[in-house]
Image (cartoon, rainbow, N blue to C red; front, top):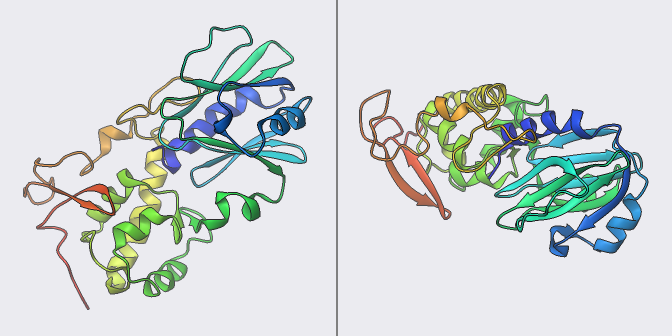
Length: 276
């Protein structure tokens, strides 16, 4: 699933492709890609102009004046620019047709992604954004906020970070990476982390998100940006996807377990359980 660095990369590559373009009409070939009524979606967007492409955590926000399209790519959603009359692939489900003859097309092999049309300013009340914590690498994600939030939660730290409810933007790849960097066992209850561990984890989250964004995100399976390019942060990964390989810090082979249904790779030697 694209995580915050990947979605930010998509946003940056989408912006010059669509901002300033006016929608002539919208084609929808798979109605379930829309949260809400597809006919209302098409009718309300006709004649609207893209003014900006924003992002919060893993969500894209297409700004069209008083309306905003909130888009969640989920596992394999992708956008690319094409033309009205380009042949439609079986995995392409929607396109915004612009008055200049170009089109922004949405493709999704697994059909998990969704687009929701809302009034601008209501995104955090009526969409999935309302359930998210603060963004990593934001002023709101202070060390004090993070420490207080962890103390209130007893679930294991891996599951908590994956839940998006305390800090939003990290998925399976980056959670494994930041826990390894911080020498934290993924099964450690969040409220049992030491002050030093919390500080190290806070720094690791911010630094990893920043670096991964600089490298255009991580392409492990199928992630591509809006220009069709892949990310390069996979070349920097230390632990994710490296089960059975030696830990670059201590030489112990990485192990992989399931936590809340997600594969979790870590080092038994470096990431031992520690208490105050």
